[in-house]
Length: 239
Image (cartoon, rainbow, N blue to C red):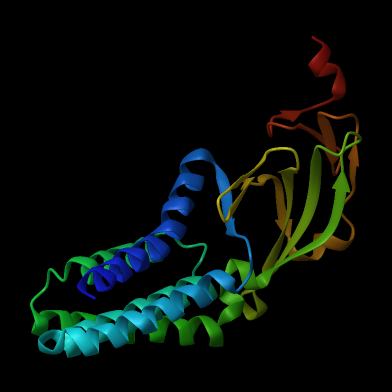
């Protein structure tokens, strides 16, 4: 049974470590990373965490309290990452640190208990804050208002609106590379959008956008290439 117990710890560590590692890989390569399968992945993590908690109670009585608290903290960290902070590399890495603590049980029981409770409370507070003041988060306030695909459909100029309520908002035109995508295991990678233009919130309904060809797009009379370079006119590219 001890082998199964250790295998559960290792499996739990891998499950929680993969998303932030994939996220870090995406950041290094300039990609956005998302998990395929919707809620299936976090559900598996939660179930496995519950099993580890039960095994900790049954087979590690001397470290029951500390181990179970760390398991629960790990579950809280995982839920917080998935629900509120999946775009935050720091919080994702925090999940890895917690899982490594869980795996190695490197901390003394008392210190592990204090650390687990403290981090769990902090994560819960962050989750509540993000839920109550969700409009302050880029993801919650972000809305794609309009899309303008290039003639060859390899790129899309997205008009993105950020509504921050009383704090105001803004309008961005971001270029999305539709062709540069990668699927690896349960992760989907897409090239990060390149922001070509940023303006006032009220501009989103009247901004003028048109593609000149597959490599040049006009935004409010200013021509940009697909690398974000600003050109005064199309003839500049022919010189």
